[in-house]
Amino acid sequence: MKRFHVHVAVEDLAQSTRFYSALFGAQPSVEKSDYAKSMLDDPRINFAISQRGSTPGLNHLGFQVDSEDELAALQTQHRKAQLTVLNEGKTTCCYAESEKHWVTDPQGIPWEMYRTMGEAQTFNGEPELAPVAAKERTCCAPSCCTPGSAAEAPKAKACCG
Image (cartoon, rainbow, N blue to C red; front, side, top):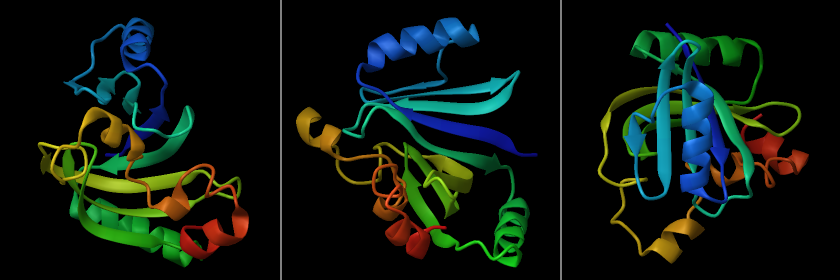
């Protein structure tokens, strides 16, 4: 079963965490110094926010799936539809071990298709950076798939969509 995924870059993580906790009526299931994630069942959504140097606003959308077969089916569906697929394979991102691929919509919004296989101790599997340096590291969308760069259509279409 798919779970809709939304990731928003924020300026003030604590303020945004309070807002979204009130909005959803639930505390985040994961809280880090630069990231929070709420796994909601009603609506079925994986909603993440991070304070890592990205321009505030929508970072990316996606679908989280439960199995390798579901992920493979999505990738087949996207390739059959002649979408350009950036296959990342197994990776570490957003405090999780996962397997994923990306596509980018016509507006330049990256879409992440992934399954989570376990937790990671750091945001992207690398040693934890000092707070200032960590904020300079953006979310895990490949640089050609992130808003701002993805909005530059020729490069984004060649990479992710």
